[in-house]
Length: 133
Figure 1 (cartoon, helix red, strand yellow):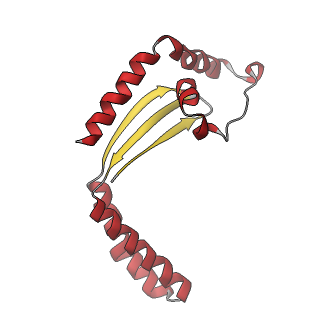
Figure 2: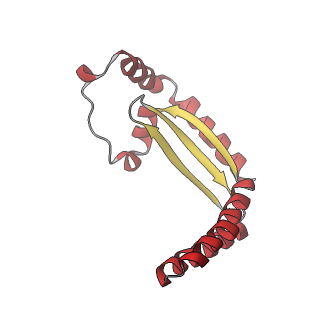
């Protein structure tokens, strides 16, 4: 199973695209183990829940992450904000007067995306193609 998401840092104005590819069977097994874990705690079997969580849930999650391939693509913050505005709905407008020196440098760096947007789009396409394999 393939999934992607965007991670942002609103202090330094940095962002990355995360691509993950996991075996579907392992994801189903992990989801089933987590569902059983949640049912055990709701029914009131705390001791059984603790043993299940330690011996089954954590090991299936470890197995899943062991077989998950991840690719991190660092991107300019405002480039991603422009391309994927729905992912930034929680963001608010920034007042540049309140931004300290370090953030101001990061802000200016992140705004340079307009000059190199084609390069970033080619990079995303290339990595998406790699995830297909």
